[in-house]
Length: 238
Image (tube, rainbow, N blue to C red; front, side):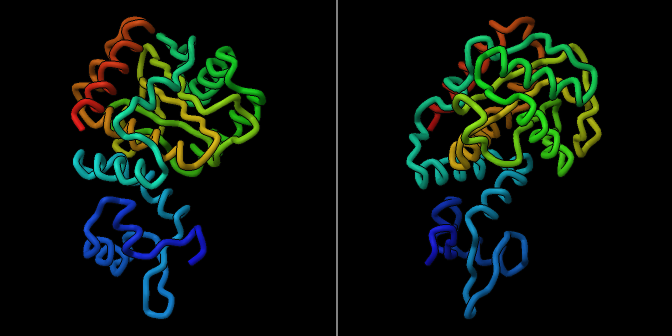
């Protein structure tokens, strides 16, 4: 079987999901796949995009299972910090100076450029604009996770996350119509790192009390300490 394709058993392992549940989702057209010679065949790239779209609505235990399955598949240690080490020095902004979606995206890219993580800021800005135009990365609760449509292997110095907190809410396209204040710009050199970061952030931000605490951070030092504490607590609970 080609490397980019997976069968139902491999998908069950990848998602830490019961095989019967995978087959049920596939039969109902609720997970991307096709049938070949009477068997379901999954493309890993399509599956990864499906996971990304589901992150905001998955129960916490399911999200944790997926994160562990993805970690094991890609050779990551799910018991280690991932998000916090990717936040560069100077990679947080409180406040992030922005009142519109465009201003927020520009400010995040500027923050990444000042942190010496971006070789071609105009390319990055255009990529995350196009991703937002396809489907907003804003989630309920005042959070958004903007990122490029595809990994930027040569345009960034390394995989990174920069974080900005705006003084007031911005219309950013959340499905529930809520405004957004807390932004995590995620830029990775490869798909596996990107998906793992998304899954880890999804687990950290699943608790609204954690989100509220982050939203109340009065400066970058406080924001950094909260992020470290919350990710460490998540790792320690596994």
